[in-house]
Amino acid sequence: MKTVVSSATRTVVIGPDEPFVIIGERINPTNRKRLAEELRRFDFSRVRAEALTQVEAGARMLDVNAGIPGADEPGMLRGAVQAIMETVDAPIAIDSSTPEALEAALPAYRGKALVNSVTGEDEVLERLLPLVRKYGAAVIGIANDESGISKDPEVRLAVARKIVQRAADHGIPPEDVIIDPLCMPIGANHEFGRITYDTMRLVRQELGVNMSVGAGNVGFGLPDRPPLTAGFILLGMQVGLTASITNALEPEISRAILAGDLLLGRDPFGKKWNAHFRKSTAARSDARPAPGRATLVPPAPGN
Amino acid sequence: MKTVVSSATRTVVIGPDEPFVIIGERINPTNRKRLAEELRRFDFSRVRAEALTQVEAGARMLDVNAGIPGADEPGMLRGAVQAIMETVDAPIAIDSSTPEALEAALPAYRGKALVNSVTGEDEVLERLLPLVRKYGAAVIGIANDESGISKDPEVRLAVARKIVQRAADHGIPPEDVIIDPLCMPIGANHEFGRITYDTMRLVRQELGVNMSVGAGNVGFGLPDRPPLTAGFILLGMQVGLTASITNALEPEISRAILAGDLLLGRDPFGKKWNAHFRKSTAARSDARPAPGRATLVPPAPGN
Image 1 (tube, rainbow over the protein chains, first blue to last red):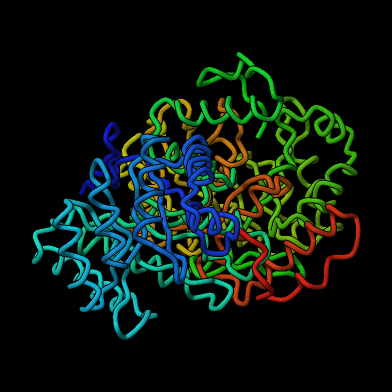
Image 2: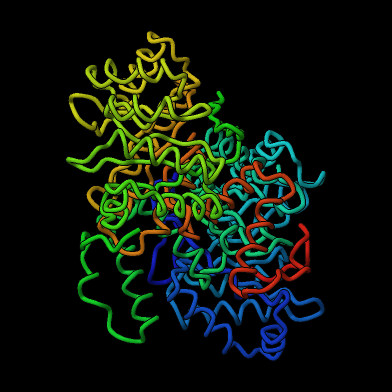
């Protein structure tokens, strides 16, 4: 199944046979004081800068969140969406569960957006799905409901199924629903990874829809988090994970995803892998890339 | 299914619910001129040093190869095995397909060894399986035969099945056969990863035996190989790979495997992950580890 999102000028396809899609997580004022201050003043210069650097680092979509308690979320979200559209051509995941904010941002968006997110709670579904439908967007559905986050993969599957069905009731086809199977901090319970992967297997097998996960959370509370985030995504790629809201600026994460794409046959001729290497070599040496590295099969540089 | 190997004083269990087993690859004279020269002189000081550093870096078994054209492989292999046994307690994978070398090394080994390797070729099976049986060893069976390395996962499965059956005919139980599903350089054909993973799924589902792969080869000819080796192993861990002959000294590889174990629920309480972090921090700062990092859930250090 393929989920197609777009900006005015660029289409991104999410699917099991497509390259993995990084949705850049950084345009989010949570725990980012200066970004929050600027958003409150409707100053979007940092939003623009973050949009550019994330896309340059490999993000193919950008998440934008403007949820600051007590502030004008609709105005800020709309302004941020406009600023991003003026800066890059990556499609946007509009990150709000507030109808007023979505009603402000979605009409301003040119293309097919991704709404992030609904849960399986009846009240949330009935509040947000009509907006998703009205503006022809796709939507992320998180596999928890009124009863919370289950540790039982079958229960998470049931919530995912409910979201897909309820979306269909509102005229939203299954290919426009991306399930988030939920990632809880592995430091709190060493079974949390297995629960998420079992959920992914079930969702892929039973529903066949695409999946995305906010991966940064998995290492919460543990040291040396980038390899945990990277490893979490790679293990997910093998069982149906097709996208992730994550930090494209962390080289270990973006590089692991490129490696996964190459190893899973989604990077023919290693074109992206070689381009990444040339870019990172050029960045490191602050010089032109070495020409000897520009081809697919140069002599082995050791392992 | 569990494969149990041992030294005189240590047992290592390979299995889908066990921590992943790194088999250190470095005691091998191929492309290592000084190691080869020393082996020819029956000087095993470098073998001892490599044994120590690999075990310290996380290798739980050690591969030992003494195949130097025209040299006394039986004597060198036996000597190297003895040197390793005197230095570390990691079980050994005796890496030879020469009956004379195995006949020299296996009787000297104390514990249950792993013989690396047989292929599915009739002649090889009939030559080596009796020795594996005679010395009560386990064996790696590589999924190719007289017709070469197939690109069809079903054919590789058939070869693996033949090896398991032929081993049984010689009195070697399936839990003592570890299948190598074969890893070819992804730079030569971007389908090679998928072929290997499909083979792993089939072997796990149809035969249920453990699997090991020589992972260093996957990035041959490509730049920036360690993340490819690491990613290849992580993707494999999700579909039945339980061990790998690889370079434990490459931090990116050993760290990715630790992350995989943690994320797959094989590192309860993150004990090994935290130990790795303390060790690498101590190595970097050449100082005592920071006490604040010693517990499982300290404040999040950012991702």
